[in-house]
Image (tube, rainbow, N blue to C red):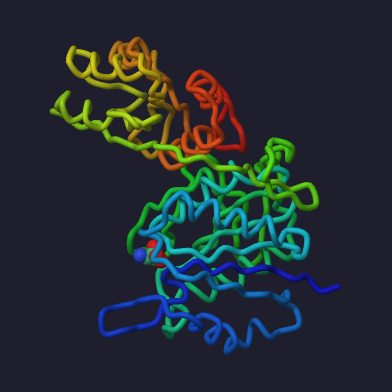
Length: 349
Ligand code: ASP
């Protein structure tokens, strides 16, 4: 039986059209471009069904509700397809690829998020290779997790970050090895794949199919991210931490440090965590781990109630906070689960 893929086009450069105002998504345009690609008609390629979202979004406009919508789409079509491709803009692709694994439990088929820096309609582009290779991997290789494919590398979705606004190797996974590297051969590294989240975490109203589940219902959750910088005023931080904020990713310095000599900043943090705001420190550095005890400046954050986010990316930490609060967990449980590896987003200490 030839493999059949479900391709969700959410928007983004890959399917955009040239307009007098610059590139913009246009309904039907990607389908036309794909229909003209001889590669996709080759019998060695899997069959596909393309589903175009309405409206098509530049990913800069995506919101958590869009992550859930994509998850729901995959869940609803899960039983009927062998693999899933999510075509997405690159700007917030790392967020969507980080969020989906928290919401999708029991995944046993590949879900590959991809896109491109140059649209398919241009003569020279990275769209063709990213699309064709993602499709081949989704059809032929056992990668039962949410991945991000870009620039010849298959990355774990919840470890990926966008590192280049222009280059064609726009994504990296600095704290977890690539799940696969594509050269003459496609080389998948099974030892780096994650064990899928169990499927039974859902409550009523959840979407279930063939053992997969989507963590529904999703309540509104208010989370944010804030990058420390020299000279930060306590008033600014206090404003950020105002209700209804439930969780904050604090992008701290180095190994998880903050201005411990600034009593007013520390007091603002302490007051917020005492109110139940979950503040998780990750490092601003591309590589390394936030451990709040290595320096006095980190221990002070811990004393103020901030928890360490280990080697999670800021993107994954934000999506995880959103996911946990959206499931209705109280702050104490959110704090505990932030320290547990739920879907390969975190290397246990
Ligand atoms: N602004 C576009 C987007 O994220 C960029 C891209 O797709 O590469 O939708």
